[in-house]
Image 1 (cartoon, rainbow, N blue to C red):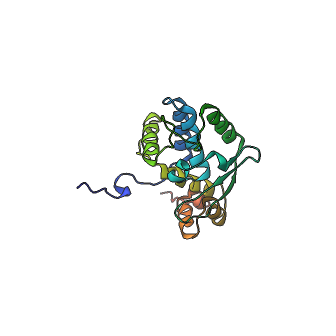
Image 2: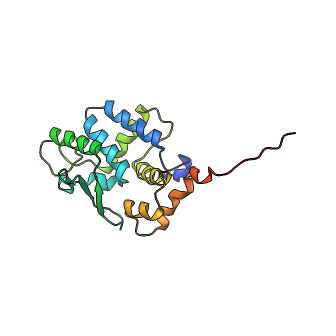
Image 3: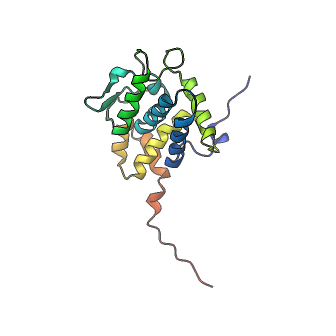
Length: 193
């Protein structure tokens, strides 16, 4: 039986930088037959810190174009909530909606069924290759990228906790550990010989 090694054996970090996310978004716009779906999927996972199962289970009735909001049904005991939908997300979702033929789920596959977590993993692996990223990516890295982005933008740990639906703030505190800006005030004095 093949035993899966720990994540640290595959990669040195569990998040993507904003540059890497943008590279994946650009790749989604040009790769495959479902460019509109792929772009909207990556955009929403990143912007709303969705777990892959939350993205796969996202239904059209959770989206209010009129109110420009999305209801996020969180998994794993996290708190669900409502997030605003920025204009570019609304445009991407409306374009996707126009392409779909019925169905309750936002992200569907070739046969009209909702995407599975495994399908999203395969897609992101391929998009990472198309984007020429030198790391093997997985969907949860986009959720982490959201948290790291928010902390680097100066949002409080409590704000990020609520945004990501964490019930325990300890799950949120990890994002502050990779905020390099917190060290930007260091003044280095070198010694001239």
